[in-house]
Image (cartoon, rainbow, N blue to C red; front, side, top):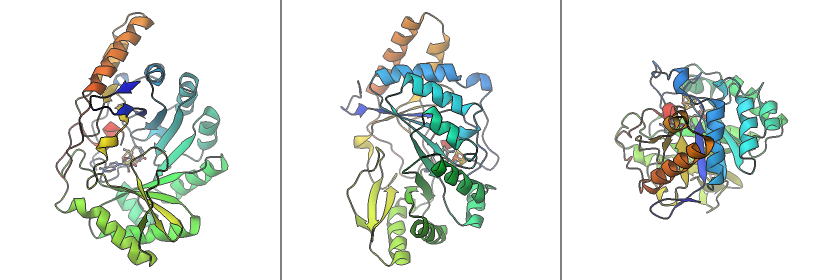
Length: 328
Ligand code: SAM
Ligand code: SF4
């Protein structure tokens, strides 16, 4: 069992399988993209599944694949199969932009992927294209529909929100879609990962709730429910559930159960702490499986013991690069 220096049990691992993405969401990376890792720097499927298998033995019970965009990693279905084999009892999930999901959904399901979150900031095609800098909304809906046909249930949507005039349009467009398709959407306050936020950003959640009340005609009621194991709070609006992740304005760090494995093999114990421990160096240093395993467990335990009490993102940039380099 992994427990940090403040007694928090670590049970949730996010695995970034690539730093590459076919979108350029404006809040996630610069328009010019990022300096991409050489493929040699990125963990192989064998390295990822080796590390994940060991962490599963140490008490990790939820594994979420992310990126960059996880579906741009060639052979992703094979990786899911390999992870199912080494960590079959874990809840294996993925966060994706959904645009490449249509041809892959059924293979992912058969390979053992249990849950899907789709990041879709606005169901208004023009706003969507602007936010993603060129993404096609139709591809995402096709991906979602293929996932439903493949048997995925409880698919959740993530939408990043910002405290500016775009919010009202975004929420209005989402509300129409939520009502007609009965979707679960979690709105996420934009986080300053790789850059600073404008003053006033921590007020986004309040503005979201006011806007939802205006578009729905109902006051959002906090339900106190937890759906899944994430930090979202859920609100009820006349039978419709809306999630809110107050990344800045609510302190969820005291119950944080997460660690992250980056595409280049660093273990991060906080989204806002980019220092990390280089697990790839241990895996590639050689030695027999038993020695590697002991060194990995020791390094992971030390990193977890020093997990920060919380992020200090109050508007200023967090260390560690852009979100696409960390895995969200
Ligand atoms: N490409 C996949 C996707 O978009 O779902 C997975 C990687 S993405 C980095 C993971 C999550 O991080 C997405 O839900 C995305 O919206 C969110 N994200 C990216 N940058 C963010 C930021 N600055 N603040 C809050 N959430 C962010
Ligand atoms: Fe790509 Fe996801 Fe970042 Fe958008 S949020 S640029 S889809 S990694």
